[in-house]
Amino acid sequence: MATAKAVEIIFATVLRIVDGDTLIVKLPCDLDFVCNLVEVRVLGIDTPELHGFHCPKELELAKKAKAMLEGVYPIGSTFALANPHKDKYGRLLGNAPVAEKKLLEAGLAKPYKGGNKAAEGINWCSEK
Image 1 (tube, rainbow, N blue to C red):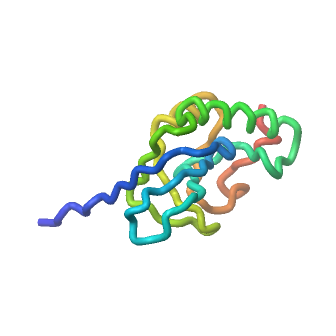
Image 2 (cartoon, rainbow, N blue to C red):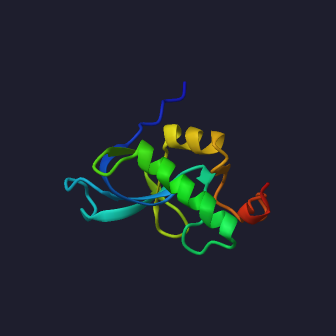
């Protein structure tokens, strides 16, 4: 019989929302790695780019996505990182099921597996 894999959960404090799928959090100081501020990317979704947007529509959607994430994770709230690992840009990845659901339902996020956005059909400027 297979043994269930242990889940590592780290509770971090939200310090800033960067955009609709990225937060800056403070990690607890009792971890093995450096206690400091880190960028966390919400796993499994992509939201429009607030910095480096490609058209005015993307910027408008990005502002809405950021505001929605701020509503789910206000400054000072707790963000739980389950089995944290880094993406190709060095950011920690974290699940945020409530935020993911709200952003997807509002059309402010798309499912994203971490690959090429164009190949995954993500283009915020061509959206209706």
